[in-house]
Length: 407
Ligand SMILES: [Zn+2]
Ligand SMILES: [Zn+2]
Image (cartoon, rainbow, N blue to C red):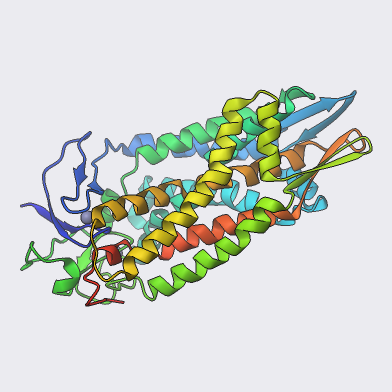
């Protein structure tokens, strides 16, 4: 029997064909990908999770990178970076570093290890449900790979100025990111939910009508289609549309527009070299890289820190405008815009991590030292406001008949 699922982008009901690994099912209405079976491996996922955890712990314990200039050396480990950041205007940055680079990945790893080991058979259903739910929502908050790229970007900025030595923890961290990504590739959330409660296709449905027209809602956490107020499989509260979506998105959009200006105009960090203090904003940082001849890095930072935030602001504005229109043409096209902005969200954080890394590493007293400045705070808040705006946007509104709004 064919499985019936609901497209979370447009709310149409889709009859899922039998798929082999390497095949992908797309929604016939909005063309969003709806299902892709993966070559899952329980042993593989467990092995990579264990390796990643050991490497992450090693990355916390030893020396990460050392920086030598004018005969003075400053070595940094991930743990020693925290007090250094706090002393140089970066208390919030220390929190961001720990939360997104260490804490979230560690939670994901421990959850995966529990799920793929024999302990899982003895875990009470309620706890199993909670942990699977946590795993379903945690991935967008893992920023370990962005941190790794940010380190490489920072090193290109520094390599002409000083002698850089990689410590064992740096290699451990790079290994951790590789194992972590490989582990995520071996996990299929659908099959994890399947182990808790098998998926039940809705019965007596009219495939020509959308789910909400038949009182059905697709669960945002596990994908189960149901007519109840709470998902029978994972107990997530179900709403036919995200409550108060338009107002919440508007509020977060306005917030991010307001934050955009200080984020770009105020300095994100100050570099002190002998007696000179040079403040740099995001744009002057890009120009410095460009003038130094690091064109690819200058382009990456420009795209991640300037272009993506601007495009996201415009795109969210366009989507809101479209939802409020009296006729909804080209819905497929707007859904595509939504899918893109959902994907690129966290990469804007790269510059925040560059500042985190430079402030932790470059501390040679009068010779050269870097302190964080207020621009970083505004920038991080702006990225957060944009992520929230996208989070609260309900793409199904693009497909709703404007005359009969669902909410
Ligand atoms: Zn669709
Ligand atoms: Zn659910």
